[in-house]
Length: 130
Image (cartoon, rainbow, N blue to C red; front, side, top):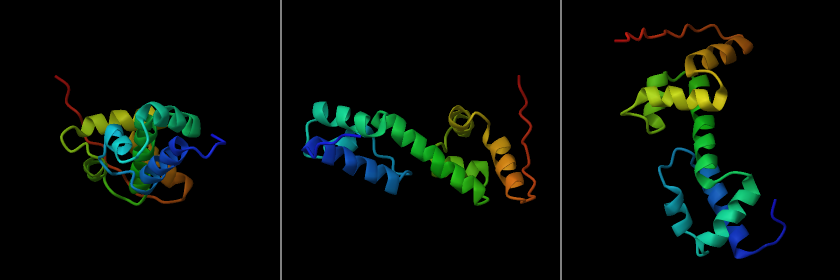
């Protein structure tokens, strides 16, 4: 974690807080950086030092964490995919989720619910491959 209190560190913290507070926001890293009054060449390394990740990676991981919380709350995979911005490509949501959690959303949801003693059935949609 950066120890100085430079404008770049303050800007990096502001971006991190914005992502943490609103993980479903569709702002690009460039838009987040543009809102700060610090040059990107100083801000981006400060953000990486603060989080250990690029802005895009951090944003994506927070989005998938929010998705996991929505799945635990009982939303369908399709509903979560739409809320996370995958409305046109829900299969990409499942693939992205699997990249972060090492299992698809259906399996992840079942595992979490079984650990919590919740017995809900999650229907798997059969995919017909051509």
